[in-house]
Length: 465
Ligand code: SAM
Ligand code: SF4
Image 1 (cartoon, rainbow, N blue to C red):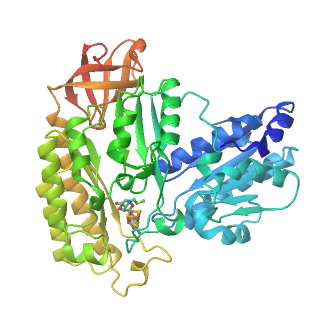
Image 2: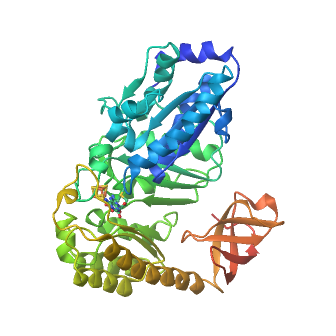
Image 3: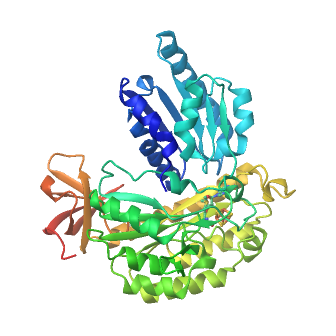
């Protein structure tokens, strides 16, 4: 569906001067996707992206509420943007500040109260209305706040991306969450779980591939719970969707993130064996290795159930690279619980992982628990865990030395004559090679494991995909 109500705005602005847009994106890949789509929405109105905030007529801060002192971070950044706005306006250049994302969703009114110089506040489900919000502010009708969960889906109102995305792209296929883990704000900020219809995803992916994209990362808070309306009238799962996407000409690689253990079906595990486009990498957060803590987190699975999934995955795809998220110091976590997490990490071994100190989030059940863990305890446990995870990541990378691996080259390397890209296991790899190979998947022999990347030598230019 195309929202025709904005067409007149686009026409009227085409005759006015070029305008600039500066977007600051914090948080997850879904926020990166959302920011890109905001740019797509504003481009027809004459807005061009600039890296220089001082040059921008519109400044958008796309925020994340998942951890830490999210709100305070926002106000501190807003202080900086306010100075830019005041300076620009002194020069006679009207400047608009918009706060988007999950902090905007959670703290909308508070933001406008504490920072009245902010012009627009909108949540993750209403950014399709951004052109109208900007117009409303320009007409001097005061601040605009849009943090409802609208009945219409924003996806029905977003234009197709019309600028080259490079060779890899994110594509949101599912949003929101109904699982209500004790520690998490997502169900409150992103709303109920919703899957986009299959055809809309195929259309967007086909369009991205026509722009030159070779690798698509399908995004969702629980992406493997995807269940979208198919063109045949049936509900499609992630496997069926990935199989269909694999037929799009030019698409070499499919990834998906983030998955929940409870939605890791046998058919999805089998797809890692059977579908060559599905990359051998899985981010499957476990959060804790203690059944007691998993229960209090409301995760809905046990440690042994997680082990079973991993066993099946390793059987189906022996070279699969595993990644996870860990929360350290969830309320009630004893030293024994922490040791159980360390044991899980030692048993499974991860190619990479993200680990966080538990951070109480307003409105969540864990935040009001009386059993909060002291910060120094959390710090000590986190350090211990991160040391092991770092060693495992280094070992995983070292184990690829000597192997011949297809690398999708996406950009120039840092040094003259280098090209760089990613392995199927999501490792950064660079090699000496001609720029003409950027955008192609080539076989590279890995020679050396460096601190942040691998270096290799080209064996074969372009794989047979
Ligand atoms: N849906 C995914 C799942 O269930 O595993 C995770 C999505 S969440 C947006 C990303 C990660 O942020 C979580 O896996 C968790 O490790 C971390 N996280 C969420 N809330 C947190 C909190 N209150 N404190 C620390 N880390 C948190
Ligand atoms: Fe948050 Fe993931 Fe739990 Fe949903 S399943 S509440 S997104 S951690």
